[in-house]
Amino acid sequence: MEDEREFIVTPWEVRGEVDYDKLIREFGTMPINDDLLNRIKKHTNDLHPFLRRKIFFSHRDFDWILDKYENNEKFFLYTGRGPSGHTHLGHLIPWIFTKYLQDKFDTELYFQMTDDEKFLHNPELSLNETINYAYDNALDVIALGFDPKKTFIFLDTEYMKTIYKIAIQFSKHVTFSTVKAAFGFNSSTNIGMIFFPSIQAAPCFFPSVLKGKNIPCLIPAAIDQSVYWRVARDVAPKLGFYKPAEIHSKFFPSLMKGGKMSASEPESAIFTTDSLEQAERKVKNAFTGGQATIKEQKEKGGNPEICPVYFYDYFLFDFDDKSLSETYNNCKNGCLLCGEHKERLAKSVKDFLSDHQKKREKAKNIIDKFILRD
Ligand code: TYM
Image (cartoon, rainbow, N blue to C red):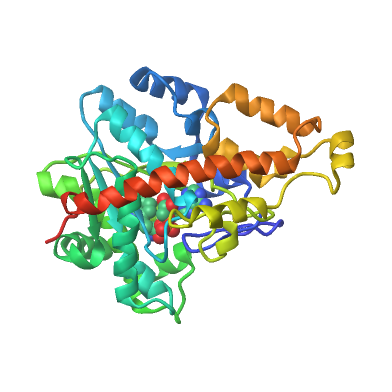
């Protein structure tokens, strides 16, 4: 969708200054309000910073998921990745939150690697490349500490026997005109992509099919994926399944001015495979909300509201609310200079990466425990 200020949010493109309130209205989702947060807290004891800070800001039927949970009907989690390259920090946001939900609600997670989608969508990528990226990206998922007994990662090309039986039943209820309207497909779209929404919908119903009874599904993802679930929710009752519920995050921002962290602009993003030097260089080259000179910064103060360096703290690198608000105030009143702030952030990013990269290495030894094949 695109508005007067030209922002676009689709599963394949996010551009411009996203107005999240407008997205809630346009997509017909619900904001996560304080009542819902209080209800979540009853089960989790604490609120993840992503909830406190409204980084997860919108949902469909999350309250229904809690109704079911409170009535002893367990739900499962479903999320995924389109393996078109290395993982960047933005991708980790929904996965970190998914891990929190798995821990707090003791749930199974089905994690789809859409190696087919990225091959079909991207003219430059071969199928071998997307398959290799799927295995590479799976290391990032595993490095976050998911429970191997409750986490099932699958590549579409390797789990298709199971997926296909559900996908074709789903696809029988979806017309070309529906996917044209929902995804913007047209007569030049390849037919693989036209069928693909059925493949991304299928895991919403996996455990229900595998276990022979209806099991509620909760999908944590950034809001760009929500169009898939709109179609899935329309079709679900026709197949006798519950509609999948969703919880949506905002986009981890770009290091450049405006926009989201994007794999197609490598300097806008920090990848989990970047060397510490590369990461440091990207942070040091980031756009900031600061003034042109130190003198001006001290006099007028900076603008954290447009500053990627501040956003990095807000999203991932400073979960301590008191310390974050000190950073905000010190930036505003000119006490914190951009150079110092970048120095501090570069250290946090490097600490995070070196720890994550060690866990990624270890993940290579246990990856087989997670992968589903048929
Ligand atoms: P993909 O690979 O584009 O993105 C993977 C996950 O990361 C989220 N995301 C972001 N979150 C925060 N900040 C960002 N800058 C950012 N960029 C991407 C996406 O919303 C997604 O949750 N078709 C999907 C793969 C998929 C999937 C799913 C995703 C299959 N089944 C179920 C979510 C749930 C894709 O290409 O995601």
